[in-house]
Image (tube, rainbow, N blue to C red; front, side, top):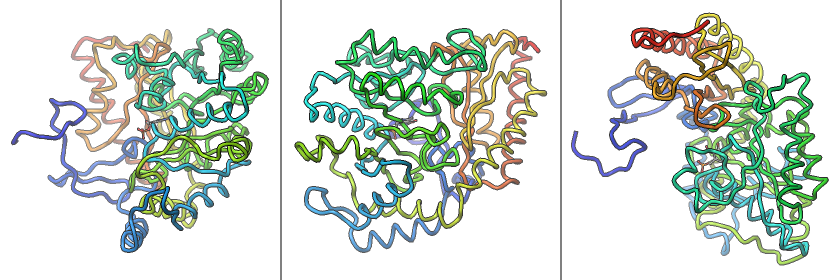
Length: 452
Ligand SMILES: Cc1ncc(COP(=O)(O)O)c(C=O)c1O
C-alpha cells in the first residue's frame, strides 16, 4: 500500500477501509461484513445508515449548516434543548452544546467552578473523582480521569482529581461482599472531602456505570444515594458523566434514573449524535443556573461549532427516531436476553471472570484463574487478542481497562446499537463464542494454563 498521511491509532496497523453501514452491520471495501457489537465507541446507538437521519441532515443543510452562537440562535438548537429538558428527570432544563464528550465534561467542570464564584465562594475550585474512571482526553477532562494508562504521559500537567476507589464489586477495594459491605466505597468520599477541605471543593464527578476504564462496572442499589447525600452535606455539586451511558444506552434517557437520583450537572455525548454528527452537551439544572442567571449571565465556555444547527438537527432527528420506534422500552429486555446468553458462555470458558452492566452496556472481564480472580499476565495481551480475533471473524468489540489499579486487568465492552434484533443478538453471541474458542486454543498452544 502507498504511504499514508493519516495519523491512525496504531501507526503500524493496517486498518480495513470502510465502505458503508446498514443497521448493526458495517461493510469494508473488500465486501467483508462486521457485526458492530460495540456501536463503534458505544456511539452508533440507532445503527448505521438510518434514512430518517440522513434526510434530516439534508433538510437542515439545504437551509443553513452553520451560524455562530453569539450572532444567531436556531430552531434546531432551541428545539433540541427543549426536547432534552422534557426527556430528562427533575430540573435538568438547560443545555450547553459542544462537540465531544471531553468538551462536555470540561464544560461541566467549568460551570461547577463558576457556580460557586457567582455564589461568592471563589475558593471552591477543586473537582474530585474516582480512580478507574474516564472523563475525556483534553487536559481538564483528563485531570478528572482516573485512568492511569491515559494519564501517564501527562501526569505533571494534571490536577489530582481522582481520590476515591471505584464501586468495583467483583474486586471490592475493601474486600467486602456486595450484600453486607455497607457501601464503604461510597462513604470514602466523605473522608476524601474532609481531607481535601470542603471549602475548596466545587464538585464530584462520576460515570454512573464505569465505561472504558473498567468494563461496565455497575454500582449496587444505594451507591449514588449515599454519594449524593455526602455531596449535599459538604455543599458540593454532583456531576454525572453520562457521555457513554446517556441517551438510552441503559434503557432510560439517563442511567442515573436507575439509582433514582438527579445530578446537578450532566455531560452527554456519543449516542446523542449517534455517530451521524459530532455533538455533545452539558446539562445544567435550574438550581445551578440560578446564580449565573442572577449574576454575570455568561458561562465562560464555548467552541466555534457549539450549538451549530447542522449537528443540532441530527441530534433532534436521533431523539425523534428513538421516540417513534419506541426503542428505549426494548433496551432492558434485549440487554437481559444478551446477558443470559453471555452467562451461558461462562460454563464453557473458565477465563470469563465477570459479566456485568445494564441495558445494552455490558462488560466482560477475563481472568487467568476464576477462583482467585488472578488476571492474566499483561504481556499475553489477552484483551487485544480477543478484539483482533473477533474482528477477523467479523465481530467488533470495544476494549476496556480493568483491575483495581486500572491497568492489570482484561475486559471488553459489548454495546451493540439499541436497534439490534433478537436474531442479531444470537449471531453476536455465536461470533463471540467462536472468538473465545480460538483464543482458548491459542493460549493452550502457548502453554498458558487456564484454571477452572
Ligand atoms: C464517560 C466518558 N466521558 C467522556 C468521554 C470523552 O468523550 P469524547 O471521546 O467524545 O471526547 C468518554 C469517551 O469515551 C466517556 O466514555
